Image 1 (tube, rainbow, N blue to C red):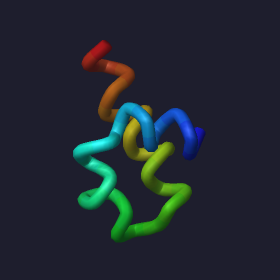
Image 2 (cartoon, one colour):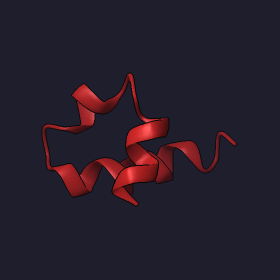
Image 3 (cartoon, rainbow, N blue to C red):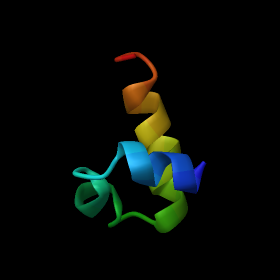
Length: 36
């Protein structure tokens, strides 16, 4: 889900890139799923 998260989490990438690259996709999906 890293690729999907990167595209959707473009602006948030810098914020979620701290914990880990894989974390971006995982964290992004959880934050974007309820929004969509």
